Length: 123
Image (cartoon, rainbow, N blue to C red; front, top):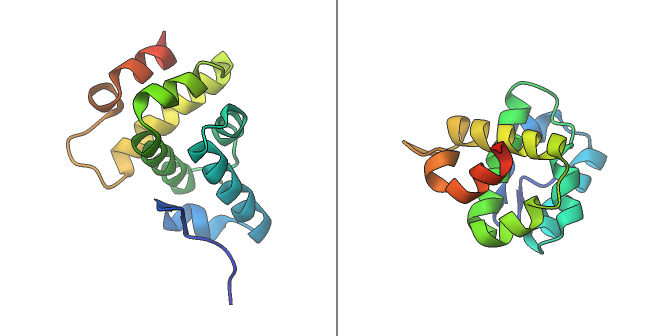
């Protein structure tokens, strides 16, 4: 029986990311999701650098990220994102883009959904 989590506090971890993780990696991702939901900027910082295994696993991490912004709200998410380094902002921007492209969204993208966050990440 697996002790890995597919859903953390309502945030869904996609199949490719979930399957490719060790138990330790899954536990760490679960902690980062919970801490980010608690508005911990350090957790968001770590999330932007989290190992996602490349390819589809990274699309899944992007989907996790979009869910987090929706849950926390753009304004509070921006407060955390302002503390990121330029490199981390670039990573977050990429994660959000693929999260919308490959997540369960139709006709949505980071520019239309989170315009102020997108501006912060791409300036």
